[in-house]
Amino acid sequence: MSNKKLDWKLVIGIIISIVFLYLAFRKVDFSRMWQAFATANYIYLLPIFAIMLLSLLLRVWRWKYLLAPLGNVKNRDLFSALMIGYMANIFIPAHLGELLRAFVIGRKSPLSSGAVFATIVVERIIDVYSFLLVMALTIVIFPFPGWVQKSGYITFILILIFTAILALMKIYHSRSVQLLDKVTHFLPVKTSQLVIKIGNSFLEGVKPLQNWRHYILVFIFTVVMWCCYALIFNLAFYAFDFIRLYALPWYASLVLLVLTTISVAVPSSPGYVGTYHYLCQIGLAEFFNVPIDAALSFAFLAHGLNTFTMVIVGLICASREGLSLKSLNKKPPLQ
Image (tube, rainbow, N blue to C red):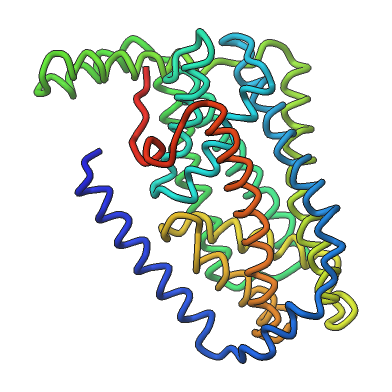
C-alpha cells in the first residue's frame, strides 16, 4: 500500500469523523454534559474493566481453537498479538492492525503469518454472523428504524457472498492459485511469486477445527463474549443512573450494542471517533428519551474506556515485542 493511498484514506476518514462529531455536538449543552460526568458513579468502572478483560480472554481462547489445526500457540503470545492489533487499529486506518496480529504470531511461532491471517478472517466472519444474530433477536423485541434494518440486510448479503467465495477458493484450492497466477502475470516475477505464496499460505490457513468439541467451545466463547459486551453497557447505565432516571428497559444494552457495532463499520478515522459517539447518542436520545447531553457523555465514557484500555495494554505488549509506534504505521508483511 502506498503512502499516498493511505494518506487519502486517513483524510477521508477524518472528514467523516468531523461530520459525525458536528452532528453529535451541534445541540449539546456543555454544562449539562459536564454535570452528567460529575454525577456518575465511577465505582462501576471496576466490574466494567473486569468484564472487558474477560471478553478479551474469551477472544484469545477462541482464536487458539481456530489456530489449533495449524499448530499450538501460547495464550500469552495470542493475547499480546491481539492487544497490539487492537491498539494499532486506533492509530492507523483500514484495520491494518489485523495484519499486525498475524505478523506478530508469525514472528513468534513456526506458523506463516498468511495462514494466521486466514484464521483472523474466519474470526471476523464469525463476529459478523454473531452480530447479525444479535440484531435479529433484538428486532423481535425492539422495532429498529428502517436504516438500521437495511444495514443489517446489506451486511448479511455481503458477508454471505464473501463466505461463499472463501469456501469456493478453499474447495478449489489449486484452481484458485492458478487463477491468482494469471491475475498477477503482469507483475514482476518476484512480486507475482510473493503474491501467489501469500495466497497459498492464506488458503492453507482456512481449515476446519480439529474436532466437534472445538466447534461447541468456539460457539460458547462467542455467545459469552457478546453477553459481556452487552453487560458492559448495562453496567455503564448504572454508572450514569440511566436505568432509574429514564426507566431504561433490559434490552437497551442490546440496542446500543447493535448501533455501536454498526458505527465501527463506517469508514471513519482510526478509533471510530465521531461515528461511535453519534450513533450511541442518537440510540439513547431518540429510542429511550435520554437527554442528548447525558447521552453524549455516556458515549464518550464508553468509547474512552475501551480506547484507553486498548492503548495502554497494547503499548505494553508492543514494547515487550520490540515494536514502536513508528513501526506500527507500516504495513506488516505476510509470509
